[in-house]
Length: 198
Ligand SMILES: *[C@@H]1O[C@H](CO)[C@@H](O)[C@H](O)[C@H]1NC(C)=O
Ligand SMILES: *[C@@H]1O[C@H](CO)[C@@H](O)[C@H](O)[C@H]1NC(C)=O
Ligand SMILES: *[C@@H]1O[C@H](CO)[C@@H](O)[C@H](O)[C@H]1NC(C)=O
Ligand SMILES: *[C@@H]1O[C@H](CO)[C@@H](O)[C@H](O)[C@H]1NC(C)=O
Ligand SMILES: *[C@@H]1O[C@H](CO)[C@@H](O)[C@H](O)[C@H]1NC(C)=O
Ligand SMILES: *[C@@H]1O[C@H](CO)[C@@H](O)[C@H](O)[C@H]1NC(C)=O
Ligand SMILES: *[C@@H]1O[C@H](CO)[C@@H](O)[C@H](O)[C@H]1NC(C)=O
Ligand SMILES: *[C@@H]1O[C@H](CO)[C@@H](O)[C@H](O)[C@H]1NC(C)=O
Image 1: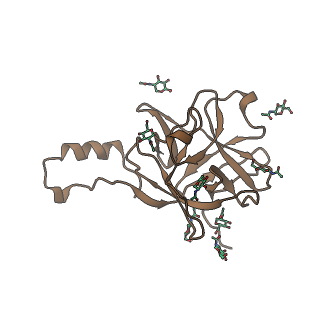
Image 2: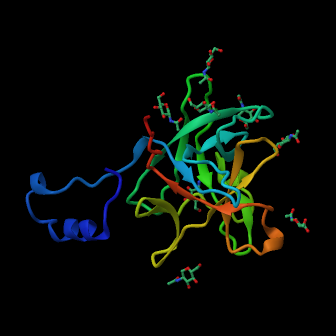
Image 3: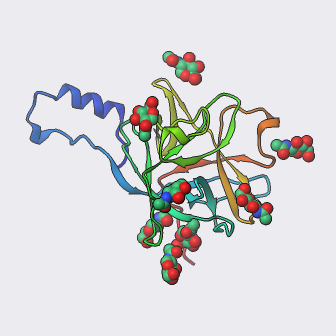
C-alpha cells in the first residue's frame, strides 16, 4: 500500500506507548514504482496512461521512444509516500541502461514558469528554481507540496516533434505566452491503465 492518511499518522503518534507489535509499521522508501500519465489534448491525443520515461535527462511520456535521444529508458521510482522532503530517485527499468549516478526527478515551481520535468544527479546541475523535494501524493495523484497547506497538481504535457511522444511539464501558473502551444493538463498516478479485453 502506498498511501497513508494524516489520520493514520496521528493515530501512530497517540499509540506510541502501546506494544510495538500492535503498531502499524511506519513505511519508508518504496522502490519499483511506475508513474502513469493521463490526459488528452483538444483533439483527443495524449499519453493515455503510459508511464513516465527518461530521455537525455528529461521526462517524456507516450507510445513512441524518441529516436534522437542518446539515452532513453523506461524508469521506476523510489520514493517515500509519507515524506515531502525526500527526493524521488529513478532507476532504469532495463538491464541495457545504467545511470552513472543517482538521479532525482525535479520540477520547476517558480511562479510563471512552464518547464519540462527532468532528472538530475546533483543540485549543481538543476535548472534555476528546480526542486527535488516536495513531491508527494494527493489521493492517488502525484502532487507538489509547496507547503503543508498547499498541494499543487500542475503537471502538463505537450506534443513533441515526434508523433505520439509528449514532454511532461510543470505549469506554475504560466501565462499563455510562456506555455507550449497545444499543451494540456495531465494527472500523474501510480494507477496503471485498465487493459480492456475483447
Ligand atoms: C518495468 O518492467 C516491468 C517488468 O518488465 C514491467 O512489468 C513494468 O511495467 C515496467 N515499468 C515501466 C514503467 O516500464
Ligand atoms: C518502455 O516499455 C515499453 C513496453 O515494454 C516499450 O514499448 C518502450 O519502447 C519502452 N520505452 C523505452 C524508452 O525504452
Ligand atoms: C536490450 O538489448 C538487447 C540486445 O541488444 C535487445 O534485444 C533488447 O530489446 C534490449 N532491451 C531493451 C528493453 O531495450
Ligand atoms: C555520466 O553521465 C554524464 C551526464 O549524463 C555524462 O556526461 C558522463 O559522460 C557519464 N559518465 C560516464 C562514465 O558514463
Ligand atoms: C540538494 O538540496 C537539498 C535542499 O537544499 C538538500 O536537502 C539535498 O541534500 C541536496 N542534494 C545534493 C545531492 O546535494
Ligand atoms: C503556501 O504556499 C502558497 C503558494 O506558494 C502560498 O501562497 C501560501 O502563502 C503558503 N502558505 C504558508 C502557510 O506558507
Ligand atoms: C526533436 O526534438 C529533440 C528534443 O528537443 C531534438 O533533440 C531533436 O533534434 C528534434 N528533432 C527534429 C527532427 O527536429
Ligand atoms: C503559439 O502560437 C501563437 C500563434 O501562432 C504564437 O503567436 C505564439 O508565439 C506561440 N507560442 C509559442 C510558445 O510557441
